[in-house]
Length: 553
Image: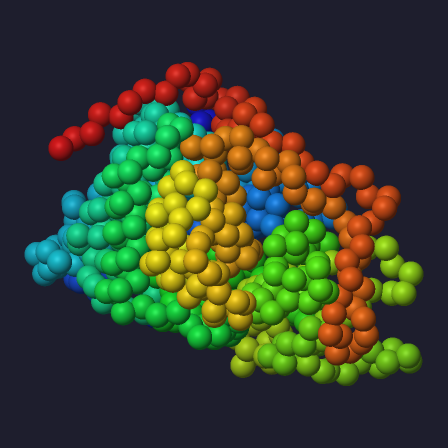
C-alpha cells in the first residue's frame, strides 16, 4: 500500500543529494542506506546528523512554510497564487499541504534512522557524550517535526522505528495528547544531553531545547480548552532560563537579523543551515520564491504578488492613523514605496531602456493604479554582487530561523497572562517592552493585555512561518477567538500611495474596490489541515479514531 512509503521515504531521501561545500554539512557516504563502517569516530557521528539541519526540511521551507505559516494565518497575502491558503481553504490536494506533510515525515524518518544507526553501529572510539549528543539532535528534530504535524493535522501516528512499518504498514493515529507528550519527552532528552555551548556554530544546544520546551509547554497549557497552570509555570520557567542563563542576546538592530551574513548570530537558538552550493537540496531556494522582482534577484524573483495583508499593516502603530509608523520591523519585513535598502542592488532603466544599478528604492505604483503590494523584505538579500558572489538563481546561502531569543520574552508574557485578558505583572511588561524598544516603538505602561502580546508576536515574527501556529495554540483553549481573528482579517488587494517620491514621509492605503475576496472563513470544519489525498486514499485506517500511545519507561 502506498501510504507506508510516506513514513519510510525519509530513509531514502538523503541518498539523492551529494556534494556540499560547507564543513558543517559534511555527511556520510550516500551510496548505501547504512554504512556500518562510517559511525566510528565522533566526527563521523556529527557529520551524520548534519543533514537534519537542512535538506530534510527542504520541501517545507521552500514554499509551504510561508504558505501555511503566513498566508493561511493572514499576515501575508498573495493575489493570484496559493489562493486556497490565502482564503483559508487549504485542501487535501493543496500543494502546500502535500509538501509540508511529506517534509515532516522525512524529518521523522531520518531522525529515527540516525538514532538506530548510532545505537547499532557506533564504534568503540566514539565517546558516550557524542553518542548522546547525536541522538539528542535527532530527537530534537523529530520533536520539531511532530510539533508541526500535530498542530497542522491533529492526531497522527507516533513512529519510532520506520523499518518496522515494512512489515506492519497499517499505522494507527495517536491522540493529540499522546503526540504532545512524545514531543515533550524528546525535547527533555535533548535538553539533558546537549551541551550548554554548541559544539559548532549552527548546532543546537541545551538552550535550543529549553527554548522549544518553553514553546511546547505554552502550547500544551491550553490543550483541552482550559489553561493548565503547571504547564504555564513551566513555560515561564524555561523561557526565563533561556533569557537569563543562555548567554544569547537580542541583536540591537532588528533589520540585521535578516541581512547577509546574519547566520548563527547571538539571538539565534535554532536555524536551518543553508549554503551557496551546486547541490539543490542544501541551498536556500525560498528567497527566489518571495523576492518581488528579478531587478533585485538572480534570474528569479517570483514573489511579485506577495505582500503584507491589509490586516497585518493595520497592526503597526500609527501607520493607518498617521500615515507612518516608528516600528522598525515594518521596513525589515515588508516594503512600502520609497523605502531604501542600501544593502541590495536594483536594476533600473531609463526612458531609452538602458539599464543601470542603484541601491534598492521600492517603487511606487502608477498614478492610476488601483492595486499594489507591500512586498516581502524579510529574507530577501539581493544579487550575487551584494553577497560577495555567494548567490545565484534559486541558490542563496542565508539560513532560516526556527527559534529566536525574542520569542522567549513573549512566551514569558503569554504564560503570565494564561487565560486572562490583562496583567500588571512587572516582569511580563518589562519583557514585552524589551521587544518594543528594539523595534523603536513606545513602551507600554502599567498593564499588558492579551491583545498587546498577540500583536507583538504578529509583528515580530511575520514571514517566519509562526503566525499560523499561534492561531492553533489559541484554538486549543479558545476556538471562537481563533475563528474571530481569521474571519475579521482583511486579506484583499489594496494600493499604497506615498505622499512623495523618492523619499516619502507618509503613506495612504486604499482598498481595491473591485476585489471581492477580502475575507476568509474559519470554523471547526477547516481549522486543521486534511491529510493529503495521496495518503488518505491509500490508508483508510488513518480516518479511524486515534488511540493513546503506550510509552516505554
